[in-house]
Image 1 (cartoon, rainbow, N blue to C red):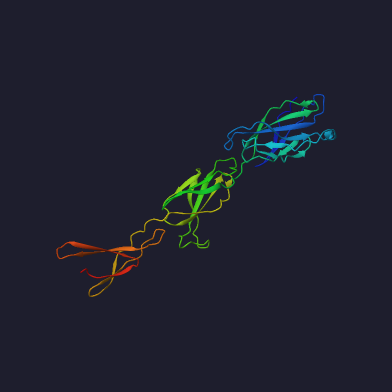
Image 2 (cartoon, rainbow, N blue to C red):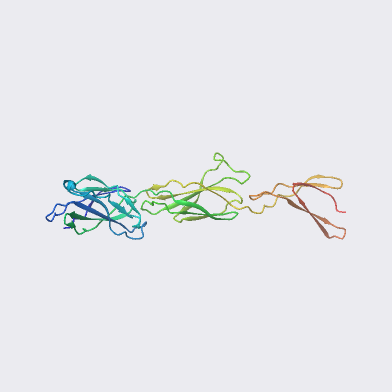
Length: 308
């Protein structure tokens, strides 16, 4: 005779307690109660796992008559992969009716349990299933934060799902802070406050409106209704440099008898170094046309003489 379905007695984020009643012995003492389990498809599992023996109740009166059994095996429960097996850490709170399952369970997941009785004649039929759930929990940190591509004013960042989503839908929060340029990096004490660059359910973010040639620190964490994970390790990434912006207006510094001394403010190098400035002198000739002379200079002050 197959046992009645087990009853959930206690549930945590990574453990379940089951209570069961011993079935009719059918003429021979019951030696063991086998506990079978499978993961039920949910938001985190895409397939069912076939029944696997995950624990057993041992009748203490018959221990002396039996060959010692190996540790019960928990195979792929909650993972959708029956090839990953780990030894169960089942603990028996009451040797007659209760078992606590602690190995291989995940927060917010559904599991189907059923029982079968064993006597000296053999193993009876597997009983009816009961479906129970572990408690929801906050997620663990996302994985593999990575720079995918970059331009002079944008960064594309990706990451992977955390190992545990807690059984609830996730929102990801990507934070960023500017850390200076190659020539002027900021220390941790000089760094500005973190700001949120992206918040949503996607596993990537395109961050626009950044400065050319700047270094940025990035980190991401997951969040559900139960709380937030820790941040990932910080990723340092930089935008590419861009052509410098035009310098400010040319100013007249001094006037000589046959020369002009001009200067101008520095140009924004856009993440690199300004190598030189191009200065053009435009003169009106006696024929009322224009003569343009171009100078390539590294300094920002120059003395101009009239053309011959």
